[in-house]
Structure formats: structure tokens, C-alpha cells
Length: 264
Image 1 (cartoon, rainbow, N blue to C red):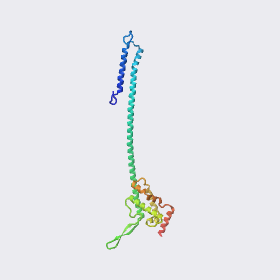
Image 2 (cartoon, rainbow, N blue to C red):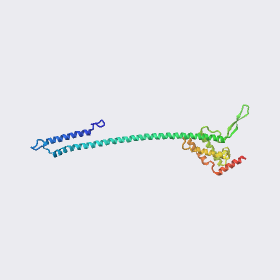
Image 3 (cartoon, rainbow, N blue to C red):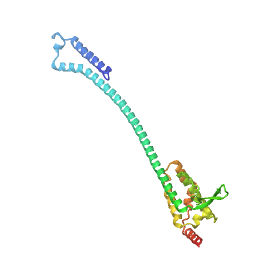
Image 4 (cartoon, one colour):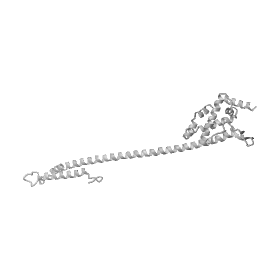
């Protein structure tokens, strides 16, 4: 007998021991001394004695097969425990693989969302730039040099504080715009005068506070954009602008009064 292409030793031993017990019982019964009235031991046995004889012979055989069955069952249970352990290990490996795939998918999703938020940030900055250039640019004729005849040459140039000589790249542009706004707010609070304060002190209130709302809208993307944009939105200058932008009624009235005074 074989189990998993191996000889089933317990069964072979049980069969051999059973055969040996049966032969031994047969030989013992046959060679046992009998009375003179009988020829041979088996011929002298009554039905009751035959039962006792068979029980005595079969009981050891039954015990052998009981022990063999218990041993085989215990070995099968041990094999099942090994298979269960291997199955659990395989499940664990599959779980680790699935977790890795889930983490990778989550990372890809996060990167995709970050790219979308960054593109939205750039688009909002581009829209902001169009609005700032439309409302705060100051085109003037400026001296650009002299011709060969010695005549002065002039050219039209934007001299607005928030629009002149601004970088083209959206993230860099936004950082520079915030820096200039921060300088304006700080100068205004110190009571200083100059081109960096004029737009904030004498500009139209609707334009001043519309700019604030646009900045707040862009600031909502702070925790969703890529690291370079996040660095700009987390810059101390941006925090300073959002925290110190003129908001109180007194500051609004003062700015409006200054604007009206400048109109006369």
C-alpha cells in the first residue's frame, strides 16, 4: 500500500502483525492438548468455547488495527496542519501582494490628483495674471536711449508695480506677485509712500478686495499640489499677505477716503 507514492508502513505492519496473530492463534488452538475423548483440539470445542476462542484471537487483531487507524489518522491530521500552514502562508503572501498593489494604486491615484491640482493651480494663476495685468498695468512712454542723430528714443513699457518685469513661469510669477503684495502691505502699515503702496492705498476697493478673493481661492489648493507649488503656497510671504491683507472696516474706509482725496 502506498500513500503519496510512499509505502504505507503502518498498514503493512498492521497486516503482517494481524497475519502473525491469526496464524499464532490457529497454531496454538490446533496444537493445544485435548482430552482422550476428542481427536484434536477444535473437535472438542463447544459453541461457547468456539466463541471464546475466536474472541481471543480477534481481539489482538482488532487492537492492532485500532492503533494503526489512530496512528494513520494522526499522521493525516499532521499533514493537514502542514497544508493549512502552507495555505495560510500563501494567503499572507497574496495579502501582501494585494496590499502592495493597493498601495501602488493609491500612490498613482494621489500622484494623478496632485497633477490635476497642480494644473488647476497653474490655470488659476494664469487667470489671475490676466486679471492683474488688465487692472493694474500702467503703460507709459519711457526713455530707451538715443538714435544715431542724437534724438531721444522712447518706447511703451508697463511700469505698474504689480505687473512690470514679471516672470513668465506661473509658479515663479505667483511667488514674485506675493512678494510684491507683501511689501505693499508692510509699507502701508508703516505709513510709507511710493509706487509699491499706491495701488493698495489709492486703488479701487473692488479691485483690491477682488485680488484678495482670488488669492484665497488659489490658497485652497495648498495641500493638494506638487512640492514646488506647495512651497510657494506655504511661503511666509503668502501667509503674511493672507493674514494682513486689509480687511477691517476702518482700513476699507481709510483706503476709500484716500482714493477719493487723490481724485481731487
